[in-house]
Image (cartoon, rainbow, N blue to C red; front, side, top):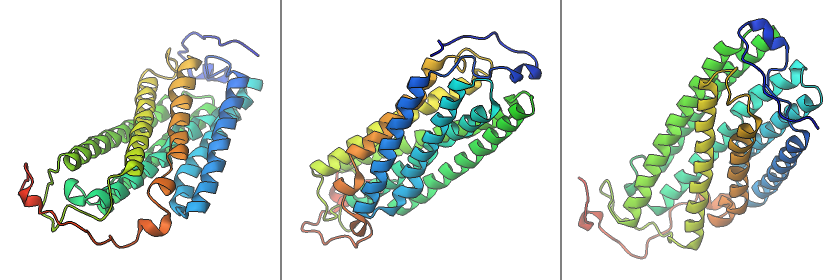
Length: 305
């Protein structure tokens, strides 16, 4: 096992012929993350089948699979650090892997809004999912284009900085959308808790209870979102610091702030699973149950016309 090594900043594009990491990825750490993401992804696949939440496959399972590919590339690099293919492999996959996981969080929040009361949210559950998943797709495309450009540059012994700038734009856009998402989610939760609807509704009661399962789902969604947000902040700082900067050339930052954060986020959804806490797939699209109590939101303090 080779220790982490620092390299001097490189000025010319031909320098990228040598080790582009600035260190040698630690073999056992790469294996650990491959195993962790493999376990979580396999469990998610089984949970999706059991709960019939089919959207988990193109979101969380894809995210986990991309993380496995990315860390497999880093493991390959730990055995041959100067090989280009594994480096290119991990550039693209680790940068875009969390994006489908973000989309899953958007879907879960949309369902919570639908059940707890859309009158407390600035967007309906449907539009919440449409708007933020669309932003996620845009971020994914931009990051993939930038990652592909950076990978091509490295493969041609050129400086990957231009592609890195595109990747940075995608990360910043994603971080901005997550910031808006978390702000609106927090507002929704506080308005619900203090019964301060934003718009008129026949009833603030939906027939669903704010019970222990819903509270656990909110807790899991909050923690997962924070982990992903921390990772986005790290990636923004990393790419802004440049391809020859201290941050991108320090392995422990990547291990903890990227791999570690996404591991926590994806396992959180395993343990606090939407299928177990909010019901199986047929319940997600079922008509809203009849309310046993009608509350006029216009009588709620803080109602806005």
